[in-house]
Length: 152
Figure 1: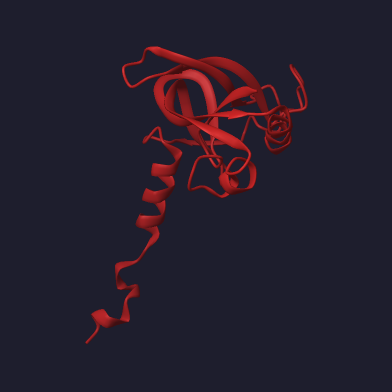
Figure 2: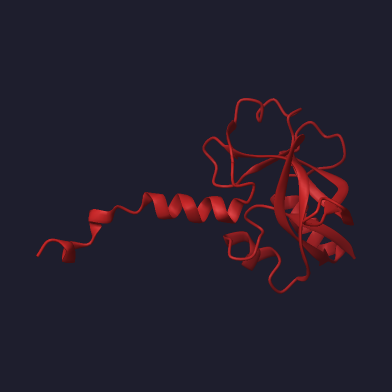
C-alpha cells in the first residue's frame, strides 16, 4: 500500500475520482502541501509546482500497487527522472491546517523539465483548492439572463 495526495481531478466530486479511486482506494483525510497550483493552457486539470508557499488543499488516499500504476499512467509518469513525464511522482510531507506535518504521501508535480510543458502554465489558482476553483468558475459562467421566467 502507498499513500497518494490528490489535488485536482482525482478529488471527490471530480471526474477522475469515480474512475480511479472511488472503489480502489481508502480515504485517509484531507491535508495540504506547500507550493503553487496553476491552470494549464488547453487542459481541464491543474498543475502543481513545489515552488511557492501556498497551502494547496487536497485529499490523501491509501492505494494498492495496481491503483498506483493506473495513477502513474493517468499522470503520464514513465519513471523517475524521465524527461517525457507530464508529471513527476515525488514523496513529500502532507500538512495539517496549522502547517504541521501530519503524514507523507506521493504527489504528482507538473514536470517543468519536459519541453512540452514549459509554455503551458496558465494562471495561479488563487483559491489553492481546485474543486473550489472549478465550482466558482462554473458559477461565474452561468448567465443570470438565461432564465426565461425573468421576462414576464
